[in-house]
Structure formats: C-alpha cells, structure tokens
Image 1 (cartoon, protein in one colour):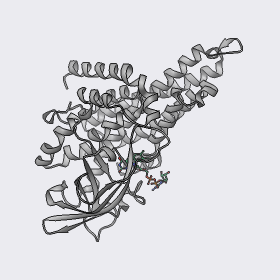
Image 2: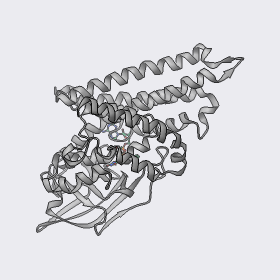
Image 3: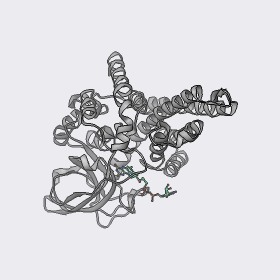
Image 4: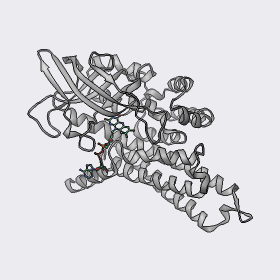
Amino acid sequence: MDAELFGQVLDAVRDFVRKEVVPREAEIDERDEIPAEIRDKAAELGLFGWALPEEYGGLGLGMAEDVRLAIELGHTTPAFRSLFGTNNGIAGQAIVHHGTPDQRTRWLPRLAAGQAIASFALTEAEAGSDPGGLTSRAVRDGDRYRLSGTKRFITNAPLAEVFVAFARTDPDSTGSRGISAFLVPAGADGVTVGPHDAKMGQAGAWTSEVVFDDVELSADALVGEEGKGFGIAMASLARGRLHIAALCVGMAERALAEAVEYARTARQGGRVIGEYQLVQALLAESHAELAAGRAMVHEAAAKYDSGEDRKLGPSSAKLFCTEMLGRVADRAVQVHGGMGYVRGVTVERIYRDARLFRIYEGTSEIQKLVIARQLLKD
Ligand SMILES: Cc1cc2nc3c(=O)[nH]c(=O)nc-3n(C[C@H](O)[C@H](O)[C@H](O)COP(=O)(O)OP(=O)(O)OC[C@H]3O[C@@H](n4cnc5c(N)ncnc54)[C@H](O)[C@@H]3O)c2cc1C
C-alpha cells in the first residue's frame, strides 16, 4: 500500500482503538461480547481484510505494514483483533494462496467487507501440537466428499459462515501426508457448532467445538490439491505467528504504560512508588525486553516480505514476544500490588489475556522445535 495512505489507515485505527475500544474493554470483558457498533466500525476501517488482496476489497497490507497495525491493535483487548483475525490470517490466507478463482471470488470480497467470518478448523482432541495426528476423514464418493470429524477450540466458530477444515483424504496415510483442506459452509447439513468455551481470558473472543457429521461436499469445496492440506495449514500459521508476535508487542506497550502511570501516582511511605528503585527495576526490565521484541518483529517482517525467511523469524518472534509479554504483564501486576489482582483493573485483564499466546498457533515448545529443526536443516 502507498506509504501515505497506510499512514492514514494507521492513524484512523490508532484513533479508533484508543478513543472507542479502550473505554469499552472492561464492558467487553464482563459481557464476553464485542458490541455491534464496534464490529461495524471495524468493518468500515477495512480491518476485516487488512491482509486480503486489494482486488477483492482488502487493504492488501504486506507483513511490514501488518506488524505495525498489529502493534496498534495490541493497545486494547485482544478479543477485538480476534473478531477479524481469522478472516485475515489462518482462514483467509488459505483461500488467498490456495483457493480456486471461484472460491476467491465467492468468499474474499465478503470476508474483506466483514459480511462473513471464516474460521480455521484444524485442532482435534489428540491433534493440537501434532496436527498430523488428526483423524477427521473426507471420503471421496463419486464427484463428492463426505466429511466427518470433531474439531475443538475453533476461534470464531459461533460466528463463522465458512470453515477452512482439514481432514484426511487418504485413509492409508499417516502424519502430515494425505490431509486435504476444504471450504465447509457453516450452514451445511451435518455441521454442529457447540457452545462457547468458558476461557481464562480474552473474553469477547469465542471458541467452540465443531462437529462434522457426514457432511456432503462437492468436489469444488477442495482447497488446493488433494493431499496437500498440511502444507496449506503450516503456511497460514507462519504468517499468523509473526502477526501474533507484533500484537504481543502492542499489549506489552499498553501493560508497561499502565505500570508507569501507576508508579507515578500511587503512594506508599509518603512517596510515589516510582521513587523506589526496586519498582524502577520492574519498569526498566520490561522496557528493555519490549524494545528487543519490537525490533525483532520489524526485522522478521522485512525478511518475510523480501522472501528471505518465512519460518525462522516468525517462530523466533512468536516464541520471544509471547514469553516477553507474559513477563511484562506479570511485572505490571506486581507494580500495581493488590490493585493488580482486582477485576476491572486493566493489568489484571492483560495478565489473563496474555496467557493464551504461549499456547495457540503453536505452543512455545513447538516454536522451539520449529526453530531448531530449521537451523539443523539449513
Ligand atoms: C483460545 C484458543 C483459540 C484457538 N483457536 C484455534 C483455531 O481457530 N483453530 C484451530 O485449529 N485451533 C485453535 N486452537 C488450538 C490451539 O492451536 C492448540 O490448543 C495448541 O496448538 C495446543 O494444542 P493442544 O491444546 O492440543 O495441546 P497439546 O498439544 O496437547 O500440548 C500440551 C503440552 O504438551 C506440549 N507438547 C505437545 N507435543 C509436544 C512435542 N512434540 N514436544 C514438546 N512438547 C510438546 C505442548 O507444548 C504443551 O505444553 C485454539 C486454542 C485456544 C486455547
């Protein structure tokens, strides 16, 4: 995107996040729901399609722009980003890069406009860190497939109009081979979305179990080549990892700002607590780690855009920034003392919200394996 235009998009998003979403984040946390007017304004700003191509109505942002946007989105509840995260990320990217021209024309304009939500359905009870262990099956029946299986923790499933679902098409295959990706309309016979999971944090972002019970799909529901679904899932996740790392940088900026403000104003022993050097150490450590994470994200994004590295950088950035945010959020709670443990205080919410990032889109342990394997391969 043209630099001046991108600057305007970033300013508009920053303004909206800080003036209209931040004041309502406690309400979102309490009611476990994003208000309809916030969803509508997000659609107006183009947020449902920031990473989707311009020809389909998206903003077509590259990775360097994506991370700058994600840092801004990190300044409020991550449930806000989650609402349009799957359209741009894990689900939307699979359609952009592997969908047929018909699939792209049918879905991408509606996803970019926020008229439809797409979810990414890969995880199963015994196939989370090891998606190659999935047991969902799609059996070919003439010019159709019949899909059966149970997915869990699927973000935006209760809102989704379409699922990018992964199932084994080769019954004799094991591991990453023989898996295919399909576009499954949420309204198809045999699709059941369970109740929202009651989560530790990120209230307002919904996940559910999704059951596919002998769902009949026409052959044109296949995304990419039959048997190549695992690669499609991994490529979508790599881009998502860098985006999540940047979001964590934004959340750490917010947590640190809250801690600095508290340290400047709260008093103990007749002095503001910011005058105590042990409190200063908590702030200084967080600032240094945050600066490292921010630099890492921008460098990884530049290498992603140039094509130099789309694997090591995203995984390293996700590993470091999600763990960094955990430490920064923990210190922000510590700076607040007892107030940091009270519901309704921003750092208490950030502490709970932050925990998810070390688990989903590949746990920290899995990022370490991805990084080490890549190093040894190179
Ligand atoms: C809120 C939320 C939203 C999500 N959204 C989606 C979504 O939209 N779509 C989707 O498909 N999935 C989604 N997920 C699933 C998520 O990606 C998985 O939860 C995650 O990958 C971990 O898998 P698991 O829960 O099965 O845990 P497990 O894989 O069972 O992990 C348990 C522990 O074992 C460790 N472990 C597992 N295997 C290894 C190994 N080989 N080496 C070392 N350690 C290992 C893990 O690191 C972890 O510490 C979501 C999850 C949550 C909680």
